[in-house]
Picture 1 (cartoon, helix red, strand yellow):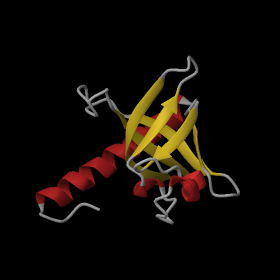
Picture 2: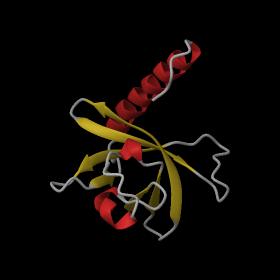
Picture 3: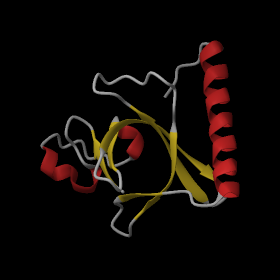
Picture 4: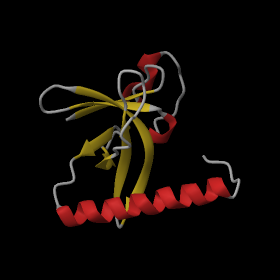
Length: 124
């Protein structure tokens, strides 16, 4: 699987090449990521959040159809890290127990966001 962050064509691993000169390579600053699966299928995903569990970070992605919509509410969870140069790296979560921990933590993130929204707090 490969990944490419996009914000109007910007890949954070090479922000200078996109021409936007945003200067920000945080995954949250980029709206989408294109996943290339093992069968070379490309899936555009909205980046929901990056969140920690213990000492590992994870990323939650919302797969989008050709119209930029998600009809089924499915969310993809991946391990998230950075290379020494700061480039983002996604990896599959291979262990069922680890996946369950990440999913539970993501549910808490979602619940907190819903509570904040219901209370009228602006979402970041």
